[in-house]
Image (spheres, rainbow, N blue to C red):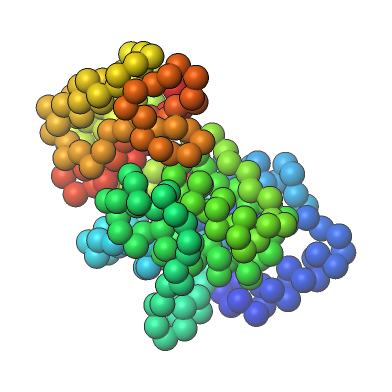
Amino acid sequence: MTLFKEINSLQNYIFSKKELGNSIGFVPTMGALHQGHVSLIKQSKSENSITVCSIFVNPTQFNNADDFAKYPITIESDIDLLEKEGCNVIFLPTVSEMYGSSQITKTYELGYIETVLEGKYRPGHFNGVCTIVDKLLAVVQPTTMYLGQKDYQQCMVIKIMMQQHYPSIQLTICPTIRETDGLAMSSRNRRLNTIQRQKALKIIETLNYIKMNVVVGNLLQLKKDATNFLQNNGYKVDYTEIADATTLQIVDDWDGEKPLVALVAAYLDTVRLIDNVKL
Ligand code: AMP
């Protein structure tokens, strides 16, 4: 595995590999790697001759300074894990390598999608995400990029950005990997203490409850029950929503036809957890 910290040297490497006809799979991450990330690496390896994984904790996508300061960093074990998985390249840039001296974000025309759910509760988040993914795609120029369904709305946002700026790069969305008890794997899970880790299961319980109880017609009571369940278990809930799985338009009255997704974002103390399930 080759490790690059500079854009120029990575670009030279990629250029030489592409000239020889190699396909490039790309997995962008913020590190503190777990089996969810590994599943993306495996998918990329199975479909490409070269797999590039980036680890970069992007400051401009954090709208909460404390969340940024407490984001877990485990570089040594991340490198070991990527080596073990047979990843070919790791890109580990500094903030100044990616942003220069000022952390300026570009503005993207994302439309409705950035006004709801994560977009509503984390203002500026998706512009920060698009800015860094745009910069990374410009450097790596992969054949295919791999993202996880765990960040459902992020996948949709990046898809829109890519249609506008990188129409020839493929996007593959991989299923959410869960712990054996159902908790969606996440780097932020490392911040949960034993009691919180147990309580964190209430998120998937809520999503499964919605899945079992969704009916044609009015969904408001179901959403309210789901929110109450989380609040009664000590969560501060940002949203418990049911939306059109293809547009993320909020669905309060289901016609029985539209594909649906249930999405939750809620805090356990200061740790914000998100998850989703297609219904
Ligand atoms: P992150 O390091 O959290 O920015 O995530 C990097 C990539 O891994 C994103 O595309 C995530 O959606 C994906 N990812 C994170 N957690 C999981 C998971 N449990 N299962 C599948 N993919 C995941």
